[in-house]
Image (cartoon, helix red, strand yellow):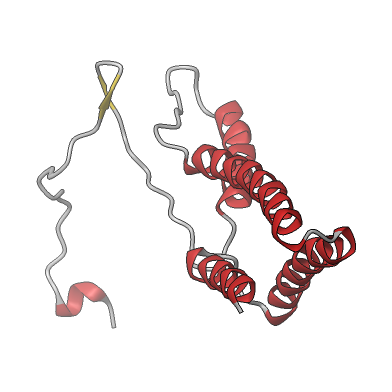
Length: 149
């Protein structure tokens, strides 16, 4: 059985609903979105590597340009979080020392909290839990509650 036996086939095109222009020329936009649970930065790097190979195979009249790159914001955010983490850690150690007035107790707490966070990240990786906003907020909440109680 063929498709032509049960349906009418014609060559036609749908009316254009969206337009994409760049540098005063018509273009084609391709959006790539990652699946949940995957690393945006790694996927973006792989796409850039593939684009280099694709550009070599294309004629010179066709150009490929990246319009939006979320990995840059993610890398910048990671840098900001790292800076805030060590600054917050130093401030926490100073406040502990100020209130406890005991260097040994301050050192024990100052080492225990980062080690427990590292252990948590290791267990999350082992269990297949992705690091996202919900899991990071949960870890932050547990750390804050451990200081209170």
